[in-house]
Image 1 (cartoon, helix red, strand yellow):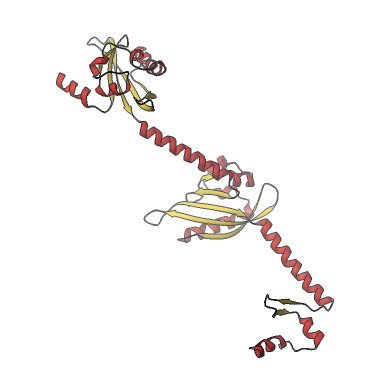
Image 2 (cartoon, helix red, strand yellow; image 1 turned 90 degrees about the vertical axis):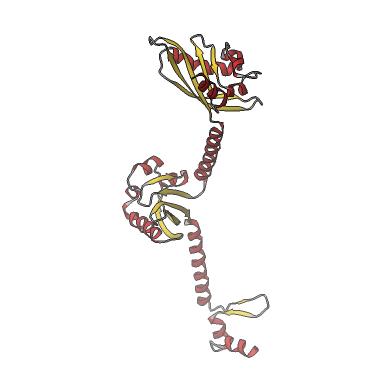
Length: 306
């Protein structure tokens, strides 16, 4: 039996230890030597407390769990920091349990601390990436959202929530986001989803929605569907770009061109456009009338020039 115990203490990857009611070490794994003050063998740690082998700031942390055990807890568990021999910080999943004698009297405790530093660092990196991604999504000047393909939202960015005047919590709470869309605009949202779900690529749509500013906005909505190996939808991602001002400017240009043409015709003014090589590209109808030329004169002249 003792040989088994010694094999565990010498070869385990975890930090294992035993203590009496006075928090004094009565047994320890060889791994514990690597994170304590200079010692060569786990037997060197016997008879010492955490305050003898760890910096006080860490000993305080470990001592807290031991007090819980001696106060009657059946298990005390916490992710705690520790310091490697090179001074860098690590983390352990530290678990401590009571030791009782044959009469049920509490006589000490034992603990198993597993090094989870790599896992902790990976979690921190992932949290930082998520925080950065959230920052980008929330501050992007476009609406971004994700649903399960059946209208249940799992994410809606701040820009779209602010534009619609609907908090993300409400979007995520309803069974189908269509419940929150104004009735007159609901069908186009559903049709846009149906088009995306029927497509194996990117779906591009023109939609209109009333925003919190009281105006109806024109949106370019791009959607894509993530599917499983059976082709069933797992998620539908949507992006909306407000093109209201762009369309207004385009309409103003069109109206201006129409007014210019009308004014030219009304004033009987002839006009033309020239390319960079000096050749006439476009003649207005009044040019033909002013000079008494047939309507196909310009084309005929170009043909003869060849």
